Amino acid sequence: MTNIHEIKAKTQAVYDRKAKAWDHGRKISSGEEAWISELLRGVPSESAVLDLGCGTGKPLAQYAMDAGLKLTGLDSSPEMIRLAQANFPQAKWVVQDMCQWDEPDTYDIIHSWDGFFHLSPEEQRRLLPKLAEGLRAGGKLLLTIGDGEEEVIGQVHGDPVYHASLSHSEYTKLLEAAGIGSATISDYDHFDANRIVLFATKAA
Image (cartoon, rainbow, N blue to C red; front, side, top):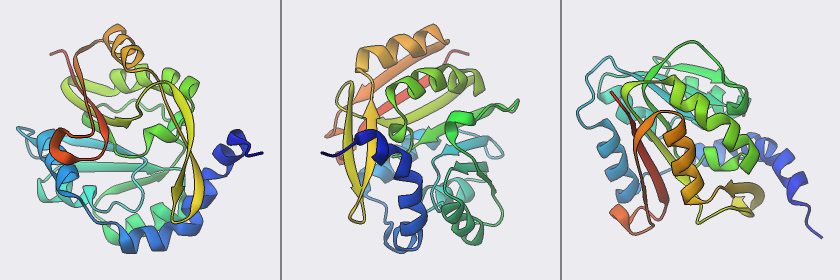
């Protein structure tokens, strides 16, 4: 019988093993590109961006660099971060589990495309208020999430990895309680991104 908690414990190791293949094969979809354009719309240059679960930086870091933004990328995989540093040496890259993220800096944008959903439901509940606190007034938050509260097994280049989600109503309630004034959840068809996307703006 598959033990989902063992798979969760081994998920970082999967990304370490698959980092080169991930970096080589990572391509941006039209839907992903549309969401990133929406995220960056109207954001002044020199704004601060935090990418949680940044992987090797491709392709999202390139958009931040091209827009003149100050990017900090955080990932629990040392090999992913090593490749990110090689790909985009002008950005700041940190090896850290996002659950342990707790720094005094604040950001204009915090996003996690296919990263946040590797946390357990309880880890997500603990981290969401920190993310809200880490956003500046008017700042934007983007997370990819699941269909509802669940724990499931996905794959990265053939190896199993852990995924989890809260219910959509709980995401909204937690963010509202943490001071996020506007939060929407879009289904798979929005921008044809093949993702469920939570997009929120912190009250000014």
